[in-house]
Structures are given as C-alpha cells and as structure tokens.
Image 1 (cartoon, rainbow, N blue to C red):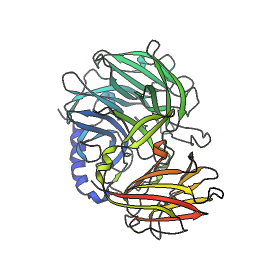
Image 2: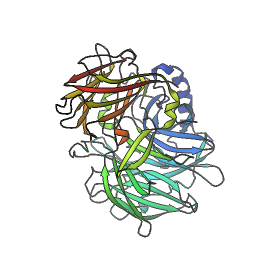
Image 3: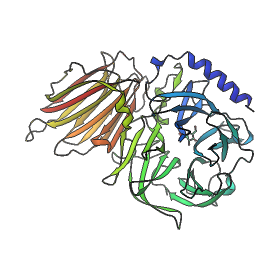
Image 4: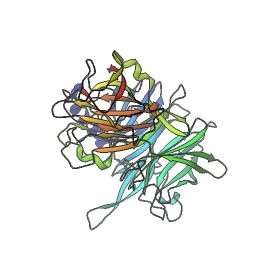
Length: 496
Ligand code: FRU
C-alpha cells in the first residue's frame, strides 16, 4: 500500500529527527520534523485533535520535491509529529504534492485535497513547465491513499485562457447542507491572479462555479494559498500574492499577504470586496491557512518565513521552516485583527511587572529577559506638551546580537530591525509599519519563542513577524529613549 518514496521519507525523518534536540527547535511553534518546511496545509480538527500538515522536504533544509509533513495537537501549542502523510508517488503528483486542505467525510474518513505537480516540459533555460492539477487522498488521520480518480480538477476546469501551470492550493470546506466547496489560486490571461470557486456534492466530483475574485494586476501577480470564510458577519478572502509592488507602508515588494473584506453573493458566486489590508507587516510571513475550532473561533496560522528572505537559512541546520503562533481572528473597526490563541496564556509563568517607568537610554530591567516570553509594553509621553522623539527596545540581546523594535511617535512609525540578528546575507532586515496611537498611547505584545518574534500592536490590529536565528544566550532586553517616555511592561515566561 505504501509507496517506496513514502516509506523512504518516513524512515528518513524518523532517524533524522532523533538527532535534533528539543532545545534546538522552537518550543511551541511547529517546525519541520527534519529538513524543510513551507506552507501550512490541511489545517483541521479531526477525531478530537487538531491536525496540521505542511509542505515538506525531509531530506535537506531546502525546498525540494514536495511531501506533506504531519503533526497533531490538543491545544495548537504542544505538537506531536506523525509520519509523513503524502509523498510524490503517482503520475498526477510525481513532481510534488503542493499545498492543500482537509475535511472530514460523512463516513468519518479524512479527505485531503492538494495540488499535484507534473513536469510537462524542460525549457532550454533549465526551468520547467509544471502542469498543476487538484488531487485527492483519503485517510484515517495517519495513513492516506491517493484517490484512483486523480486528478479531479484539471486544465479543463479553468476558464478559457487561464493558466494550467499556475493552478494550485485548493482550500476545501463543507457547507451546512453537507456539500463541498473549494477555492483555488489561478492566473488568468492578464498574467495576474484570480481565485476560482468549485463545488461538489460528494467531495470527489467537482464542477466550476465562478471566478470568485480577480486581482486585475492590483496586488502583485499570481495569488497563492487562498482562504475564504465568514467572520463577524463579513466575508474574508486571504491570499498570498507573488511579485508585489510596494504601496505606502501597507504593502512591500515581493511575496506579500493580502486580506480582502467584503460580501459574498451566492447567486453569482462573486465576492464583492470593500476593504484591503496586509495580513502581517513584518518580514517573515506567508501562506496563511485558517481553521474553525470546535468552540467557534477562526484561527489563522502561516509559514513564519518568506520566499524573499530565505537566504537567512543555513543549509547546515537540520531543520528549516516554522509556523507562526496560532492567531484568533476578528474584525474590529472594519479591520482584520489577530491575537495569539488564548491557550497560550496557560503556558505563562514568572510574571514580572513595572509601571510608569521613565525610560533611560540603554537601561535594562531586573527580571525582563528571555527567548521564550510573552511581553506587553505600553508607551505614553512623559510630557504631552513635549512628546519624546523615539523609543526602542532591543531583545534577543547580548554584546553581539539584538533585534530592535523602535517607535517614533511624531511619525507614528513602528520599525522592526533584525540586522543584528545573526543574518550573514544582504537581504531585507527592516520593515516599517504606520501604527495609530490612541491619546498618545501605543501598546504591543511580543511573543518570543527561541527563533522568532511576533509583535501584536494595539490589541492585534497590526502584527509584525520576524525570525532570529541567534544563540539562545542572547536573551537580554534593553530600552532606549530620546525624550521623556513612560512605559508599563509586563513579562511572562512561556514554556510547554
Ligand atoms: C506558496 C507555494 C504554493 C505551493 C507551495 C509549493 O508558498 O508556492 O503556492 O503550493 O508553496 O511548496
């Protein structure tokens, strides 16, 4: 039943993972069991546990022929690895099992839908033309069988003139009447992106419904990894656009993320967008996927890395690629807000709190340190008539390394800078976001977990995410001020 390539992947990961001590991984963020991880896949709740699959190349810490890694959890923070779920081993997916999603079938089996990649042509410049189709696998939560009828969606099922080479990342869900829908990323004749909507009565036989949304060359080109759901009475479309051009402080060059908020018209199968925003304003974030938890929370997870900053990876590391902390979503004042899942609060211990501290340039505070911490900082001017120029906090800090977060109230700009965070490459190390202040106050919650920092600004209305691959002994916090700035700070240790 199990193909040679899957057996080999399972054998390899089992041995390779034993050589990676827990202390060399993030503590509560999921990382590649061995080798390489990118997008989250098949995020779902099945048979009493959360399942998270991921784009996976178990053999090396770089992207390769795509498998699906697999892990389960009771609380989305303590993860247990399961054996590799999918390997490229059938004609439709012989060159890769790309991103996809999961639902439960009425008979209790689990249905995975993913993109099968098959190289159709080798071009003179060394690149390939890969045909992408949508495929199915059915399983019990550990072992999966590829559906003999694969592929179930092909180039025949895209609108006239649309690409069969960029047709990927099916996001599957069930409607209240038990029927199935999926959205898939695609490239129309204008070369940018579009999201296609399909429907099925049984999950196996699919029919094109509509072009749900069109990029029309506004936000980058191809749209990858769509997700589409209802949230707080609105409809939300999340995509990861490739090849973005920048726009103010909202969108940056390269691979970005986009949230569109609007309404869905079931009669036409069209999404009417009203507002747009970036999903994350930091450096290392791409390819989101969400789940509806049994208690009704919409929770997002993403690849805590970005194709444009991969040079930060060390090929010598035994694993590369981590997921973000799971984030609860809501819509507040017309914006998508994210907040670390409440389960994280159960990992907290060792509270340290200071109030109304006047920040002295270069100061440290007793008890405020660590690389697995949950820190909330709130800032306000000491003198509202003469507002300070700049505040900065360095974290993950020692004599050699630090990651910096700085805030200039005059411009209302928050900047993350990981230039001194161990990178040996000339890639992007800084990013700025325009963040509102309420009566001069700005608050941010920082979640650190050994190799990353996620900064939730003003109750999660903006988030900045960055990785930092520095020694864990670099665990200091230092504070800097130009002018009179007052700070409240609260820190908890986080441990699984
Ligand atoms: C996004 C992506 C997907 C694709 C997968 C391949 O990061 O490019 O579009 O399915 O990664 O690993």
